Image 1 (cartoon, rainbow, N blue to C red):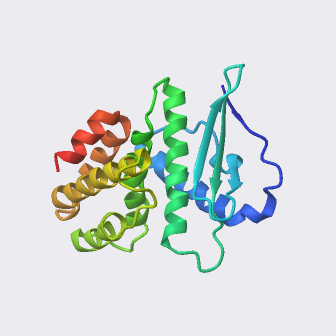
Image 2: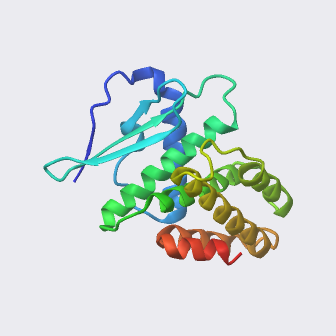
Length: 209
């Protein structure tokens, strides 16, 4: 069973975050064909100053999975990084909920890799029109012109770099095979396939590009 941790004090100061998170959740669930388990808006909390998005998941003694998603504020003038953190957090939430629903485990690398792809998915869908050129520009901004918080020699640093590289390669392949040729039905099929497979297959699909 899935339960929510106490999220007291959220109220109206999370209106922007709740609205965007709900829209992202709806879009991802529709794309991947997954059933709604819980509304992400009910699990939101404000991240502390300087804290990045964080999905907290734990199991209580009764077997309930307790979830809280901390997101940065989306104030006026919020930049791409803040929006990407919301997308990443909701991606983590949707992925964990689907794994709980189906009784499957998920690794941290799986979560990061799926979230990296979902950033492109959500932002590409928000464009007026998507072609190989606009996708390539977005991909470069998301995966190539980036700075990592953690050093490459650390566990977190390695995980984020592996996820970033695999997502970049996977999206580049989608551009070549689907976006550039306007084969958007196939694009949807391949994105769904990627979502539903586990870590090793995700890495294989990325590295095959």
